Length: 442
Image: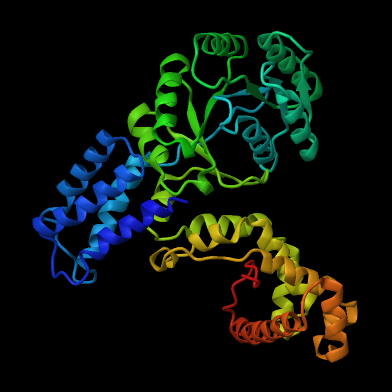
């Protein structure tokens, strides 16, 4: 995400490389590039100007510490100002317990609103809540069917009103049903239009009055740039929503909507959609996002993803195997499955500190599929004892997995290398220094 903006920021900071100190002249030179980067990213021009002025005011006269370079000092200043521009601190998403709380989801057609409702339900269930989805969009063809299908995939209840029913009535009925069935959160998928109009806003206002939502979330397509911010301004004026959701952020290489939204509307970004899967939803953290934009990685989010997919009991067994140097290809396959659950590999690479400085890294996710196919084509004995895999076995495994003998050879070499690395970890573990809970397949 934000690849174009990240590259331009890196270019601006490189202009300070080799300079002995920060001066007004070299600061101006770097900030011209920063301003150009923001405008090309479709950031609101007033926001871009204010941001550059703030950075300049902090940078001029800043003492450069002996332990850092002028470029590093500038990165720190820009990071702090960018985090402030994005919202300063994470605005928590808290909904009251007890009686069913309502989360009203609004936005225009095509923004990813219905899919976000399902993602949010999954997110809340993972945190111990019992959500119900309610389809209050009676205008878009198949909107209710889409929500019912998504709810079915998650195994969650979905309230669908009758054709032509009043959306306000659907919302009220869903709330009563939630009380009767024990659901403690009702997520309302409301109707959108292709543009903001009076009828849509009046209907949303009536739903708000009838249900008294704990949160009103505006879903915006980050790919639309300043158009998304303009839509948000109108929704803020009429509906006073509590937070924004940026969808398709994984595909947005510019980032103008994310950077401009808080400054223009005063509303926080609470969630970011980072993929198509129903678990591809992140709470929005301004400081972490600023780090990603500047190519500094995001270790905290990376660790959180690891923790979400790590089975502590399996991690303990894996650690014991590492200590005993008894890893098998079955263990390798399990770790690949855990890695896939963490999200797309290019996103994970982007969270690693320093990776942003080497430019875009092409990650072939199909390679994981080939590895899984190869291991699945092996017998249990072969997975546990790869040393028995001779030439004829390699040919059989290649035929069964749709790969080549060269692919089999490559995997076995990689596995041997990984075992040697694990052996080193095992030596550390004997001294009490072995980290646990991290998929070694990474």
